[in-house]
Length: 486
Image 1 (cartoon, rainbow, N blue to C red):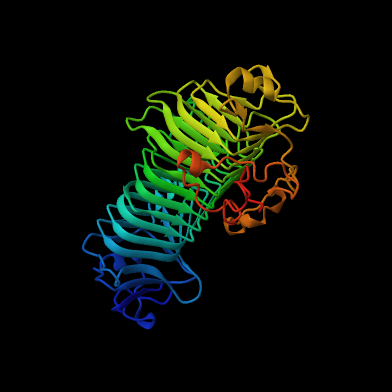
Image 2 (spheres, rainbow, N blue to C red):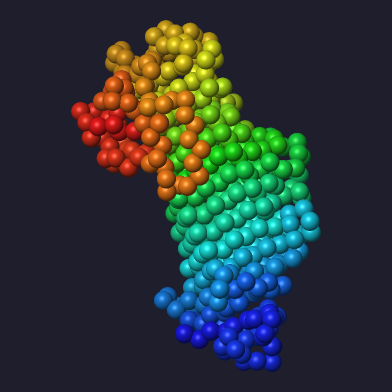
């Protein structure tokens, strides 16, 4: 495999660049080369190279022989994009960008609309082990591309988003961290400061990622919306799973953990952990997309003390939020309702087999109709249930017909007896989610074998395992909540 080398200290642009001893010196010289399938462009690790690395459509690989931009020697090379982008690939296919640090002048200090890695109209691309910071738009941005894989990357201190994928299909984001991406100072009328965002995509997955401390410096332009930790919009068949979102913020609306926003359909949010975000753990919100927000599944997620409920849905325009299955989640919130439906717009939302532990002396839920509750366990530390102005669980069930099936109770108001319901496990490693043992059911929990048979009664495939990786169901009946105890 041929390789070209760049060394800022000992290189010379008069060299052929074909070995570390005969390396080029500058990015400009490297950009003049046309890389062919299987060839690599390597920058000396530990050094800083100023400028923008550019790959064009003529620099494409073939399956099994990609074009690669990476580092050689000890450590990773730094590409300093200054006021603009650092690495650009446009119209290429079968490329890899790996083991690099890319940096800009800072979202506030002079970077103007830059991206650390920009992939435009590419196919079969990999971005791996890249650290991206200091860019006004995004650390890593793929636009109108197909089969982009972003893995083991750390995007921090950027403006609009840490990792942002727009358009195309077949994308994968895994084992990435999007931390402290505060906001884009140039966007005064829309959201910025997102962790990981997929828009206009299909058939894509985000998993084993952490998103935290984003969105705290979004400009206050008077807009009601805001950033979210990990989310998608105008998207189809998206899976977000095994991720952690915590301490995400906003200076206006939103600032939550996870979101299926307007135009998202046939998608699944599962096995995620959300805690202490400014807004809700899980948001389903129709902003006015031309596409429907429908046919999505929210299952086996855990939310602890998120700022605006564990599950929130509604609309500010457009169509209804419809045909949503929400089951086997655990929500603990000592301040606000566990479920919060706003501004009408809900149709055929079914909430089953969840545990909701709500606040003392406050409402357990708020909604405007269009929601069916069945087989859930509700509890408040003071033993008081209130919903929609009705006090008492049995009184609410009788008045609304909720948590009843054929006139018989299928839900309950009881202490679910978690191992430690007061615990807020502040873990940050998505591969360590099974360590949330304080949030498991105790052996004497009334939720064991009390859930509804979702497959037998409603034809729902519940996924086959619980939040902790246990087979589910595995007892006489499913357990209520995110843990299948036995």
